[in-house]
Image (cartoon, rainbow, N blue to C red; front, side, top):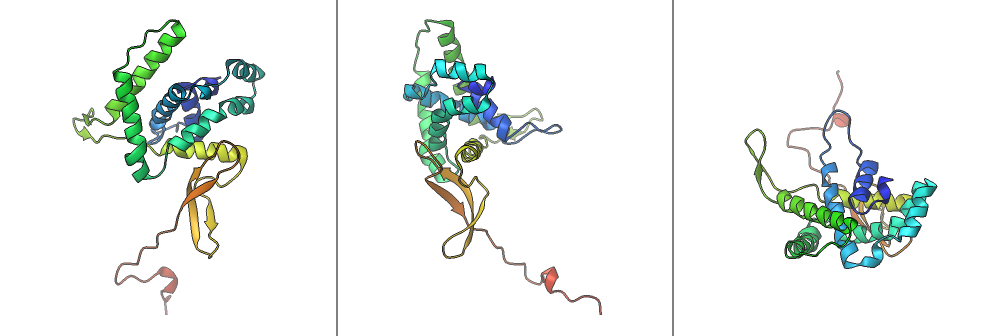
Length: 225
């Protein structure tokens, strides 16, 4: 079961669940699943207790119950949801530098694998770091034009918020709400604790653009006389 395989398998399964591949065109956001994969990899290395217990994970997989797998993987999902962000300032000030620092650490690290599983994990980690570096480096596309660097870095945070609110309640991104003073807002990110529903939300108010001079809303126009 792909959803039970840290870290690429879990990231790819989350992307497939919440950003499924379209039949006839390429998804813009889905390729950014590697950002989630890199976040999982960083977190499991820095916080080994987030690595799912092998016996519990095996039992969940053998049961064929996706909900049981999600329950075992939830601490890692929550940690990734706390690390990643939908806020541009936080991304550039905190999250991007942290992932960059992790990539530097990997580049300067040369551990010796003892088992084939460790060797595979190290190879996967190195591939992720190379992809991270390439993502932020301008390159020419097959038409000969320069593609700008970057990826849809905020997409994985949205997948995790939708996933965790589906499990524990709360308001997923895009929910329309009203503040206590009556102002309409919509949620676009959740703040997560160690368990339970969201602790708080990031919200945005609708933007009302003024009509260009000389234009009259259609509802206000007079009909034929």
